[in-house]
Image (cartoon, rainbow, N blue to C red; front, side, top):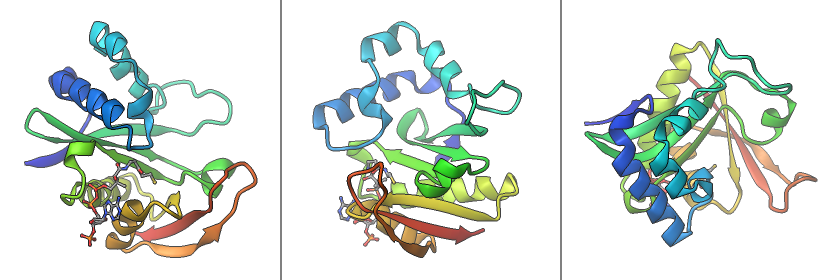
Length: 174
Ligand SMILES: CC(C)(COP(=O)(O)OP(=O)(O)OC[C@H]1O[C@@H](n2cnc3c(N)ncnc32)[C@H](O)[C@@H]1OP(=O)(O)O)[C@@H](O)C(=O)NCCC(=O)NCCS
């Protein structure tokens, strides 16, 4: 069963293979490309702690909002990740929004991105977030489809000063 879970050691082997896969393919955007596999292998607990560092109960650095990371998994298999920001600050309102997601290359184009956002929206409902902002690059056709399949309503397409490509902002009422 594909589900959204809190990151744990259970997915270490599969997560490491996903990082290697993303780095070999180098097709994705997203954080997976930036992790160092040797460091993760040596101390996976450090990654897990890092992923929890902006959850409620922690002291937030200036300008940060509470957020959580969840992984899309099937049994022991890591398929992708989402992050949910509990609120928006000025920067996230402009670009970033409430939810970010990334599917590992070998699990793409099988409906996993659409499912990941659907499950993330269920979580935002639990968190009491009623209008969810999701943003993407205007040329990220896969992400646009994922958002539109989840009833995203387009606010518009914008060229930001700090970013070289136009972006799209969508709102989803949950
Ligand atoms: C964007 C991303 C999440 C899509 O994930 P996915 O698992 O492939 O999504 P789905 O399988 O649910 O596809 C949804 C739709 O988009 C289409 N699609 C997916 N990738 C596409 C692409 N590269 N180009 C065109 N269409 C694409 C699918 O065919 C599907 O079409 P349908 O609605 O007609 O069925 C994934 O490509 C990814 O992780 N990319 C890197 C990180 C990223 O861009 N994150 C989003 C930041 S806003």
